[in-house]
Image 1: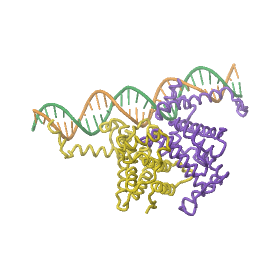
Image 2 (image 1 turned 90 degrees about the horizontal axis):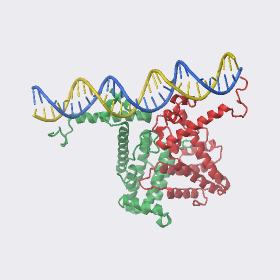
Image 3 (image 1 turned 180 degrees about the vertical axis):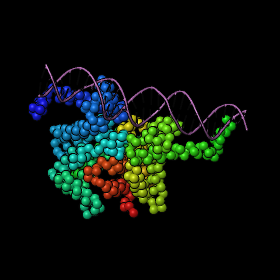
Image 4 (image 1 turned 30 degrees about the vertical axis):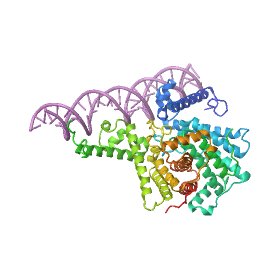
Length: 247
Length: 247
DNA sequence: AATTTTAGTTATAGTATCTAACTAAAATTC
DNA sequence: GAATTTTAGTTAGATACTATAACTAAAATT
């Protein structure tokens, strides 16, 4: 037990490289199966088949199917968050308001472009019709993971120029308590009253997006972009920030 | 082939009664499994086991597992719609505005009290992590089935006293087209501009509800009733109707 | 060079859907 | 009322899935 190859040193070590490659292949094939044939097609056996391996070999990499799915979910989360952050980092997104618009549109673009993956991100235990009871992801984060990216921009707007806030005295006590607790959980990034506005915005945006991705208003709208932009402009109004249509 | 018992006559016929009872038992047990152990527990075998039957016997009643699930979905839809209509029929719901509040709160109450069932109603092909590709239900209806109950009340308000509408000229042409098509689909129950308001309301309400039922904002709100009521009051404002808090 | 670890294998248990072939009872027909 | 058909169930089996166990051959470590 001297140094087990390059354990502590940053050098990847031939085997680790191969193992990582296999992981990537598994994940990639699993994702393809998800996208091509739906969630039910993501089976240990199907993945192994496509890799030219026998089923049980996969258990060298994931202890169970649900662990694999959970890992994929995490990957999707990261990808989405990176995508949103990249949009916020664009040079055109030069103000908090513009960054906000950019990340909202990025969120929508990713979700629509990867609806199967987004379905897994959205899946909570109650919503998931599969036996895989997916535990809530990103519990460690103070927010719903990608909601946090949104929160950051709202907080930036708040600290830069404020926006109208409601009077906590007009709210039910239970709600005020929750807002205070949340405000603390995010380390006072927003005070409770501003947090209320943030949550209202997030609920509207995320709710709208889910309606669109899961096609819940398909009876009327096949293309919900105008409605989404309208929603966005309303958020801007709530945050007292100018709305700018997409370039 | 004389009259095959009481085929055309309304008389139920001993056997038909038994068969119907078995159907009800299957559906009831399936629902219990769904509620108790989640969507993945609703298997042909598990149902048969609980009924003291052998698995394949169930195929006398449903041609496949997905047919069974689809039948359950239909049952849930009917139950929810009946529940909403019952709320609208309460004597206290004496005006369109009150009926609107009543059905919205009924929808929420049912969804929260039957989140597993609601999860199945919500499940669209893309969202359902099960192989059962559930076809869109209520295609015959002009609306998303239970959205129609909401539509009826909005239409009642519209015809009774109107509400503010946007200018179609300010909208993207594609959206106007869709609104016109939708207005026709609902037989002109609402003109396109009023339909726009209806859809905005429905998206907000339904979106908010999904956030709550699927616990997408659980990082901040454990109890979303205040937020829901706030949403409701905003809808009332959009429809130019007085908001009344719940009794 | 000897040993251990590792990435894969096959075999197997258990559960799922669903079909096929069969049985016994009920309903229909003559 | 007897003969026939229909029906509600049965068991057996094909196929697919998750997952474990026991094994093998190659690579890595000692």
